[in-house]
Image 1 (tube, rainbow, N blue to C red):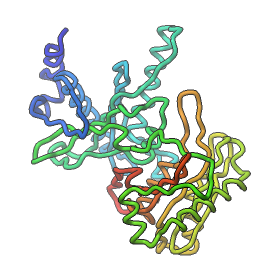
Image 2: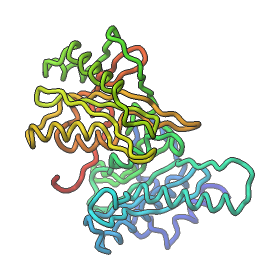
Image 3: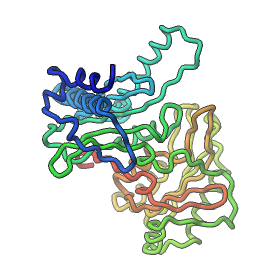
Length: 360
C-alpha cells in the first residue's frame, strides 16, 4: 500500500484530523533542522498528537491532583506507538510521572511483551524515535509549543533508549495558524554525551562561551575566581568517601551571595543518593534565605559508563530546579574537561525552560 493510500485511510471520517478540521497539507512544520516528512508520516504525527491532546483533556477533567493535563504519544524505531498521560498521586515529585515518561514506559512494556511472545534470540532493541507532546489547552487556544520538564530531560539525557535524532513534536501557532513544531533532542540538550573529566591541574585553559564571558565580566568573575572554584570542588571530590555504592563520586559548588558553598554526592544505595547541587543550595538558603542568588555552579566528578549508556556528572533535574528559583538562564556553569575548563550558562546547557504554569 503506497503512502498516499495509507494517508487517505488514516484521514477518514472517524479520524481526529477530520474532527478538528485540520488540513494536513497546509500545516507548516517548524524545525531548525532539515526535516522531511511524507504526507502519511505527517498525518500520522498530527493524529497521534490529537490522541494525546484528548487524553490530556480527559485526565484534566477527571480531577488530576495538580490541575494540569499533559499526555504524550511515543513511537519506537520499529513503529510501535504507545500513549500515556501525567499521573499524579500527590503534588510531590516522588508520586508523579509526567506524560512523556508514562508513554515511554507503556511503549517499553508493550515492546518487551512483543519480544517475549516472538521468542526471538536476537538482542532486545528499544529506541524512541518520536515523542508527541500535548496538553489539555483547547487546540484553538494553543500559542507556544510545550517542552519537556527537566525530570523528563534527565531521562532523555541518557543514551540507552534515546539518541540525538529523537524528535519531540508538539503544536504551536504561527501567524494565527496551527503548526507542527519539531525539536531534535540535541536542541534540548546540546551538551548531551559530552563527557567531563575527573583529572585536574591548575594550568588548564579556561574557555568561555561568548555569553558566559559577557556575564562573567559584568559580575566581575575572572579566571582566578573560576580556577579557585574548580580547585575547591576538586579537593572536596578527593575527600568524599560517601559515594562508595554507586562508584560515581561527584562534588559540586555554587557561588552565591559572595560566598562559596560546596557539597558532595552521598549514596544510600546504588540507586538512591543525595544530589550535591541541591545540598549546596540548602547550605546557602540557611544563610541567605529567599535572597539567595546563585552566580555560578561548578560540577566535578566521575562519569559512570556502562556498555551502551552513561550516567553524567551534571544533574539535569537539579539544574532545572534551581533555574526555576535562585538561579537563572544566565547563571554560569563551570565544567572540567580533559584539556580545558568550560564556562557556559545554564541557559546554554538547557536552552528550553519548562514553564510550570503556576506560581512557585
